[in-house]
Length: 295
Image (cartoon, rainbow, N blue to C red):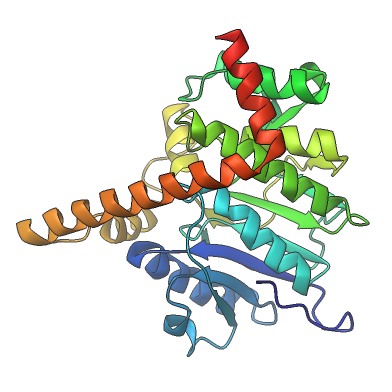
């Protein structure tokens, strides 16, 4: 459920993130601390399974949320919808992003989405080693009459989003239908592809700003830069160490087994729920029929 606020609320934008599960809640608390230091007047909207854990953090407004996508990747749309119900604009960041320096006043917001990293969807899916097959993207493009060479892919770990005269509503609906379709095929990630496709169809703008919005750390991006030889591996050694400590906590053998069983049960429950919701979504069913015809 969204919780709107009066249009006169200040400031005009917020940060927002998803924090479901212990490690993501821990990451989000560190993100909140970073923002309290580097952007003290900007609130952080958090969707979490345990919002009470954020009650004592002065810059956090937390809302109860249960994951609806099978592995949680597509629940980012609920974070954005909540943030844009409260504010004109928002900055989405993965919970494990660290903010390392002051957030400037001249953030380049524009109607729709402004992303830091991205390229054409064909280039990303044919020139990069990825997990998702390209055929489902072609099915979506064919069904929606999209010209794939004009569609973008974006890295979804951090980006700006702003209202665009209601087009964001159609964008979120398309994201939902495409997410159901991809998950029915066992493809649980790849939000950057779906964001690009949904933006192209809905007219929700997707632009790129090829400079960092502010000093920050994201482990996967820095790993790629280190691999390419464009970044010194020792520069962010402390940040990598903190990240690993949260991602790989020390647990007893029993705790590890219990955690795996719990994750497997949760995965199965969400997968069944997605399958049921998919049957109620006409566009998803259209995608699946065309996919079956082409297989």
